[in-house]
Length: 67
Image (cartoon, rainbow, N blue to C red; front, top):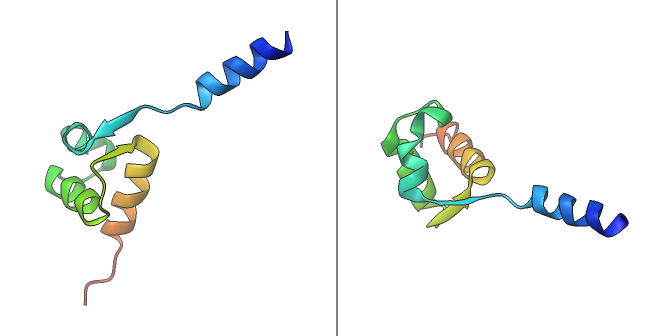
């Protein structure tokens, strides 16, 4: 029984990984334009990311101070 619970927890902890294009096509989930998502992820050196990781990168990019 314990091994079934552990296997279920591992499966739930695994997040899907998406390409920059897939994430950019879903730009409304980030409350921004497609170009912002693409630029933020490319500047972070990402070709793929989980949704949570991408969201954090995009939010940081959107609030970055302009010099």
